[in-house]
Image (cartoon, rainbow, N blue to C red):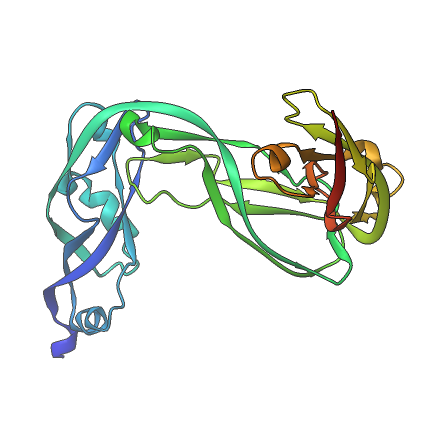
Length: 286
């Protein structure tokens, strides 16, 4: 009989904001957790002590279009509609008034940064550039905060034993600041996957930083570049996609007896295996 009686008890609940003002950036000046003063039966009081209570309550921010605070008691009817048990009744909220700090709201467009952890079946890999749709995200918030944002990361894309192309949708990371919002909240990722095979091409060497215009002969004049390339790109990728250079500063400044080969242009969708030789001999003719 005692458990059937009415009691007033307190239940902690997280606030979820909705109907945010479109032209004002806001920052709550208090915690998003409030105490609901609930009238219910002794059974409900028992369950509340066992943390069985509404996990969150939605609060409309439409009043912020004309003022800088929200009075929760003005929304008790809407709040009570969210309580699962009809016999429960929220009679008050602590704190009842929520205050917000406002600054001018601006919108900035920044590129999306894909965070990935993808493992492939042996001999398979990314065949070409990963495509994101859209490439950019719109970030809205205070100007000072947006100055610090140059890109926006996705959640981690986790795929294992991949051996075929895939198109997936992944969420963007949530903002850690309540006064910053993003749109859209997810992005489509198109990942072309193919089997890779080894290919070797001969690439002529180019001399850079020959400031005194010395006559320099390289031995050999060409080097062999071995790399892994997707089968679909095997015929397309040749020596024209690769630029190999040697820097005369190694001789003039560092006094090295050999020049190191560097690849200044190399396809992103290929995987370098080795360069032969990695260093070349040279003769300077005066």
